[in-house]
Amino acid sequence: MQLTQQIKIKPATAQEVVLNTLSEKCRLIYNFALKERKEAFKNKLKGINYIKQQNDLPELKTKYPEYSWVYSKVLQYTLRILDADYKSFFQLYKKDKNAKLPKFKGKKYFTTMV
Image (cartoon, rainbow, N blue to C red; front, side, top):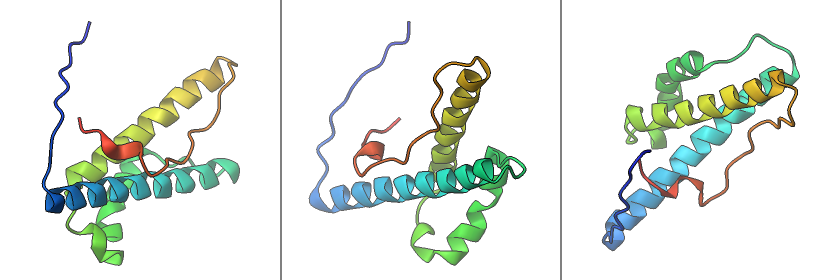
């Protein structure tokens, strides 16, 4: 049994803007990486894994400077979530269960913190 504790934070307005921007950047990274994996899966290209996408993060930060202020560990954790979603999909797919590819995440997805 895993015990958790929920703490509700009450950020100031400036902090709330930063947290919302951070969650939006994480969501966009998740959706971008998911699109990349779906295209590779559909075109039957060599599989794209977490390591390849993680190694592409520095290039992404130079191409899109708005991601430069987001810590690398945060973006890596977002990619780990996607990798876990894909591993779960393939496990269900191999067992011939009703497996569906991971879906793109909406605006309110990355609002909780670990």
